Amino acid sequence: PKRTPPAEPKEALPLRLKLLLSLGDGTTMIHSMIAGFYLNHFFLETCCLDPGLVAIIHLVQGTFDTINDPVVGYLSDRTRSRWGRRRPWLLGGGPIIGVSYILLWNTLPQDVSMVWRTLYHMAAYMCVSVGITMIIVPCGALVSELTTNYDERTTVSALRMIGVGIMGTGSAFVHSLIVSDRSPAQYRISALIFGTLMCCGAWVIFAGIREQQQSFASAEVPVHFFQDLREILCSRGFLFVSIIYLCGPTAVMLAQSNLFLFCKYVIRDPDLIQIAVPLVAVTGMGCVPFWMVVGHRTSKRTMYFCSGTMMAASFLAMTFIESKEALLAVATSFGCCLTAVYMVPWAMLPDVVEEDVRRTGRRREGMFTSLFAISQKLSSTVALTVSNMLLKEAGYVAPVSTCGGGVADMDTDSDADLSRQPQAVLLGVRLLCGVIPASLLFIAMATALFSKGRTHEAENDTQTQTKAPENATLEIPELPEVEKVIQDIQRIRKPTDTDTWSI
Image 1 (cartoon, rainbow, N blue to C red):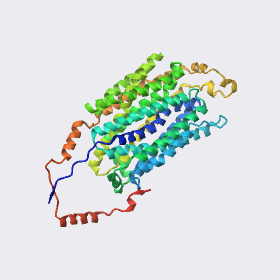
Image 2: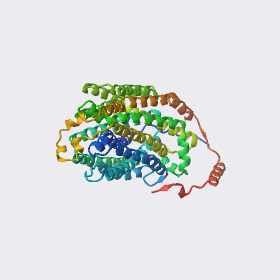
Image 3: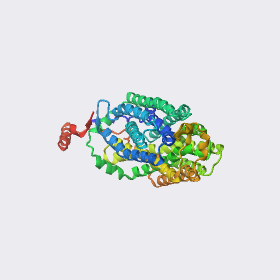
Image 4: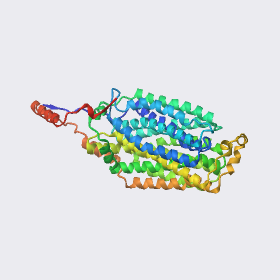
């Protein structure tokens, strides 16, 4: 007998599902945006920690991430529950990130030794990292599982950037209003608000997403952690995309984490940060549709070259500017291309995953996403560690207004702090916001140039090869032949319950 093959499933994802996936990035971006602009300053000038100890906090936390991310990805690939593979991690990740975020922004009394204060913030920071991983890894893996369409993935990545922009912009702006005086009590109020919001965001994603059945079924394939790790790290496409994602966000994080110091000590206007941060975020979100059009009409690499060139020029300008107006102009230019630097690598990752599926026949979205997320966390680790070590070597001086240690010092006008930093610190802040991040972006663009990008033509060729002709028919073997094939398969291997990690 002959049978007409069933129609191919539509690749378009429902808008509700796209918005839920974007909520995952937006939830974690609350921490990333606030911490990117304010956490280093919080450690240095509110907690009054030594720059060398702050560097150790970031270094230990980043090293922990290199273990944390692939372990969560590996376990999520092997998770088997009535909720699927990815959703249980969202359910558990919400409370972890909510509570640990509140603890991170809590300031211990000054009479507690600096070593114990350092250990406290280090532990809280590591717990925040676990919570973020339990949210971002499942959401990133679901993108690869739910669609294989080139344009759909670009659209999902763009919507994720919109979610990042909306929630990141709103959180950074509201945080700046709450901590206008930068007192410990104000930081605690902000942490309570946004910690609760992140926990609720993870639970909303858990409640709204339903995983596809084939994603759960693929969890029954035996997975070997170190073999998968070796194969993925030897993948040329994955290495290129990871280098791009390491260099680009490292450049952004260097400028982002030192922007407060730049406004305070170079421009000599601490309140300028409350204008610059929303300006960067709003322009970045507003330019997402433009970069979507560029990506659809050209390619992801072309989009990255255009945005990277613009951003590198903005960084170089930071080396020379002296006025408030010039800083705001650079912030606008920087914001225009900010989302593309993050959007392009995340849009390229599912293409790498699908290439691995075609080559090996195994679905390892969790491992790919977790190892890829390490690139972003390593970028934060490298940027913040280098920044604090450079500030320490340059002779950074803690402000008297917050770290003076006495009643008289606490009443000192904060304007007196603006002239306390030596010229070496001012030069170091300029380099951290200018030449160094621009150089990293050039490395990222050079890597993108030599990588093998996936274009619309390649996508169309793949779909043409896999698509059956309109009038094609499917030959169904006789029943005895079918039974023989089934028996052969069963003799090769019988799946066992030990092949998966159950919840």
